[in-house]
Image 1 (cartoon, rainbow, N blue to C red):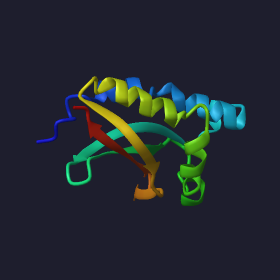
Image 2: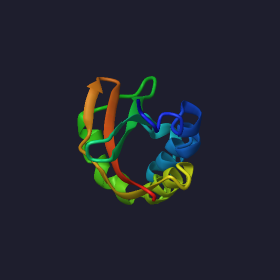
Image 3: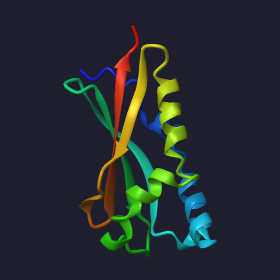
Length: 133
């Protein structure tokens, strides 16, 4: 049983990473949100009790009429790590706050972009958590 599924419902994930953030990202990048090829959604996958890590993905969903090309998404982990609109540091703090006083986030990292389907690419986000005694 995954203790964390109650924290990371679809509604909470949308609050943590609002859909508007995709448009804001492309507005900053290109000057026009309509130029963006994908929408970014935060997804919760699982808790790994062996190494005490939460596993999320930043899912890149191709927008209608756009092309989600591999060469467009493979450099994104580096960009997302430091981009102020994506703001992963704030996202980690928000996840930490959502878990209350029982657990705390420690370190985190983004993995390499993975192509799930032609219209869906995912960037793994792994967060080490610690039970607060």
